[in-house]
Image (cartoon, rainbow, N blue to C red; front, side, top):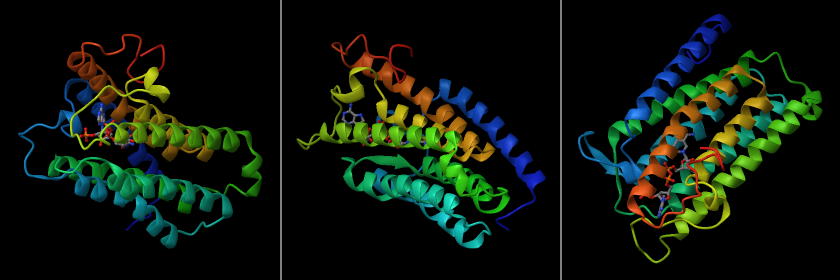
Length: 254
Ligand SMILES: NC(=O)c1ccc[n+]([C@@H]2O[C@H](COP(=O)([O-])OP(=O)(O)OC[C@H]3O[C@@H](n4cnc5c(N)ncnc54)[C@H](OP(=O)(O)O)[C@@H]3O)[C@@H](O)[C@H]2O)c1
């Protein structure tokens, strides 16, 4: 049963936000064990590239399934579906194809957790867009919330993709280790790709003006803010000449 009553949906959503806060607290103390923070003790491992494809194919495909099964397919909702799908086509297939992660591994437990997280977030947004929304109407396209939200969403997407591109280019020489990233927003923060992702889903929350969108933005921030701080500390420990003026993910602030 993909679609549920609105009252149950709200209960699940508030519960899911509470879990996000719990995850934020947990991630302040524990680094999710993938990428540079990968370590043994988290069970069976699979190639990182395969892990990314599995984790991110869920939201790439699941929202389309919900679109087909749902009852609202008005133009504005199709635009939201297109923006979401564009993001996840990049993350599920383009990003893993371009990332220089050959030979890198990832715990299967992380993949399962991410599939669950992505599945619930996709379901919450699909429920809202295709079933519960009273309808945006084409007038939503000129509403300031839609326009401002869309600008923020695409600004975040550009920051995220450009920053990931800079990171990929650091291994153009065939190396597998880590270097100090330079250029773009890396001159200001250690993790502009995470900043872009957080900005992107904040824009989504504003453009959709929905509890589901806000929940996903909260989850993204709870997930990525502590990881950005962990990356930042790691850079400062690993590189003696790491730029001192660089912050973790909010320029000049944090
Ligand atoms: N919405 C969400 O909640 C969420 C959660 C997680 C990730 N994401 C997104 O997924 C994407 C990937 O996330 P991530 O955690 O893997 O990001 P990341 O730690 O910044 O790594 C991105 C890629 O660049 C490589 N890399 C990073 N720093 C490097 C350096 N200093 N030198 C050379 N290579 C470097 C990484 O290699 P290694 O793998 O070898 O470290 C990885 O392939 C990001 O765009 C992120 O925003 C979103």
